[in-house]
Each structure stands twice: as structure tokens, then as C-alpha cells.
Image 1: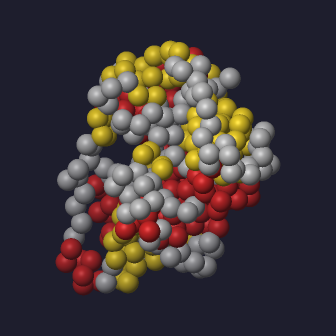
Image 2 (image 1 turned 90 degrees about the vertical axis):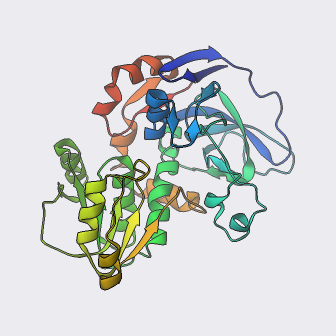
Length: 329
């Protein structure tokens, strides 16, 4: 079967890799049909590393996956032929974080396309049934959005967002818009901000209130969710949190790049919380996708076959789209 293998920085090839030969008990074999290109895939391709995660050996890219169950192992009752989304992180299940439900913080988690773990831009993958979620009524392309949507669902859950709160989302890229959808689903009054005019216009086309960075109404927000990782955005975000509000950090900037005013936080009673991936979110994320299929059409309309991925990334063409889906036959 074919796979998109990153040999080293800016050396991505489509090559044959072995197909999984068996499906162990408690696992499913999934025919991969659609994989969303994430910023992390681009970063590994362009830079060969993200922080301490360095591509030292060839690695298959991709972790936002929708597919179809091809085969089930012993003890699995999921139906063959069903469309599914795969949660890409497999935790140890034994550490303190796993025992308390915070398995996204498991130090031993094996996460698709995070060195040295292979991703899913390939024909088939064998995955634990426990982290395989039915996406009834969705296409595989739509199911692949469950992973990025989970980031937004988890951020809003951890932020304790509820009816009537004013929420500012900084960054109107894929994660920002999906986070805004999750906040809106909780009854929040949501505003999006971005430095790029095209992204502001796109957010407005989806029905959101959106403005260029540092513009818009002169308001204080109950929750500010940063999805950019940008230092200036975070500093401005802190300034528009109301006293007693929360600043939620989703975007991951470079190490040491964030500057937060501790005195301001203390004197105005502002809480700061970091968000790392997600836990126990996929069913809620899939349901949100069902409810917003119309709005999410733009997230799945740009599709490229697996064979074209190396040229596509090298050309930077992906920058012209909110999301690109790699299709696998």
C-alpha cells in the first residue's frame, strides 16, 4: 500500500509500505479514505521538527483521519463497513493522568505522526476499537474533521463556557473557527479576530462576527481563547478579558515566545489555562459536525489525491484554503 513518508525535512515521498497483516483482539482494521492536512504536518515537512519532537527516522504523516472499517478483531462489536473517525492518541491507561481521565497528558501517549510514531496517510491502519468512533451519516472527509473539532470542544469544556457569555477567539484558522462553533453550541456570543483579511471574511461568511486583530467593539470578554500562539495576540487577549474571566491558550507558539502580565492577572482575578489536545471529546465533536455540515462544507471541498501531496506541500498551494483533505484510494 502507498504512504506519504517524510524521510527528512522537505523530503516527502510516496512509497510502498507493508499493509497490516492481522487485526488483534480489541482492534479494528480501517481503510483510510480521508486525512486532513494539519499545521503540524506542514511544520514537520518544512522544519523537520516541532519543539522536542524531531523527525530522525522516516515517518508517515497525518493524524486527522476518516475511514471505513475493513475488519474487526476478537471482542469488537463495531460494524464492518461503517464510517469512523480515529482518535489519534493512544495513552498508556495506567498513569495518574490516565486514571483521572486526563489521558491527553499521558507522558507515554503514542500519537499519530508524532515522532517516532507513524501517521495515517496510507491505505490501512490497525487501531484500538476503544479509540474508534462511529460517524454515522457522515462522509469520511467529514469524519476527518472530528480530530480538529475535538480541540475546540475540549477548549470550551475546560473554559466552562455557557449560555450568554461573551467569548473572543483569536485566530480564524481551522482550529479557531471550529472552536468558535463549539463555543456557539454552548450558547456563547462569539467574536473571531485575525490579522488576515481573507480569514476574517471567511469567518463572516459562516455567520460569525469577525474583525481584524485589535478592531471591533470595545468590549471585555468572559473568555478569551487564543488559537494563534502569537505573542501579540495573547497580550491583547489578556487586556480584553473581564475581571474574573479566563484566558485560554490553545495555540502553541515557540518556546519562550509568550509574555503574560502576572500582576494584571492577579489584580483582576484572571485565570489562565493551557489546552493540550483533548480527552473524551470525539462523540461530541462528531455530533457538532453533523449539526454544522453546511457550514463545514468549505473544510472538505479542497481535496487532493495522496500521490500529489509532495508537490502540493512544496508549492505552498495549501495556504489558499482553510483546510485540505488528502484522499486515499
